Length: 319
Image 1: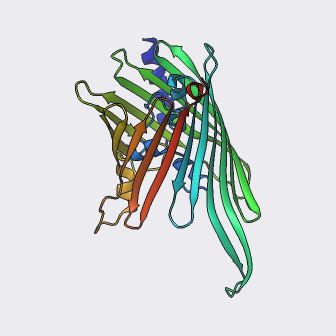
Image 2: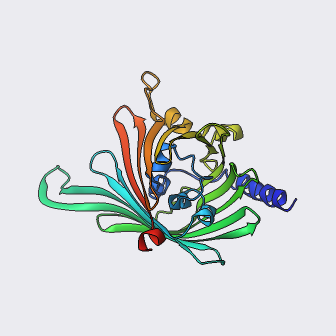
Image 3: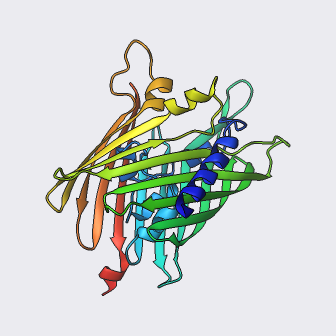
């Protein structure tokens, strides 16, 4: 009853705040801080365990990370936009676990030009950065909580804006050892400094997910609702933003991943030629000391994103 009560209160809070936040903001890059494995599963990742990069979807997940682990991700975006993140999880040995992470996006260089389009040879850049610290611990048997505090920066040329945000999450592992349930609130915060006195909101994201490892079949099935805080025409339209992801295991080393994001397919593709928009895929190679992951995401006929991640078990590498 204790668990049911906590989850019920948490769900009520999530739904009560999910009607007043806009999605157009200079901090939207926070939605794309991810890993190759998560991207291959279309972001259905809020209930994945023992993966340091799951902290971006549910900070409670780091309680399930074994030993000390680190990860590095690089994203090749469209045009000359590149981004990535670095994450480290440390075991406090009985008093919880902590994580530190950095996310960045570089939009390349731009030419200065006057109102007639004449260029003078000078260039300027645009960059986004986020710095996060996470703490997670056990709330009850197989029931974990986590909180991340983030400092966020978005700048272009000589102007910039900053913000402070919090991620919070719950993760419950059923006694069958094959099913996880997760709830998380991401990017809840406030702007610290403004551009031209213009107030901007943060891209608040509310997620509810579940995953299940099938019995007798080498498949981890993931499902999640996301963007539940976005404005919609009616309440039930919120649940059109969902993702599906399947992770297939071929032996102990090779993993094949497929995913589908209904919101991406609905919003970013034309009605004439949808193609594979909204679908994703990737592979993973799992070894004792490190993992290598590749993720591919389709955002439209001319927008394909490629992510590469490496995760390392620091303790095993040192020992």
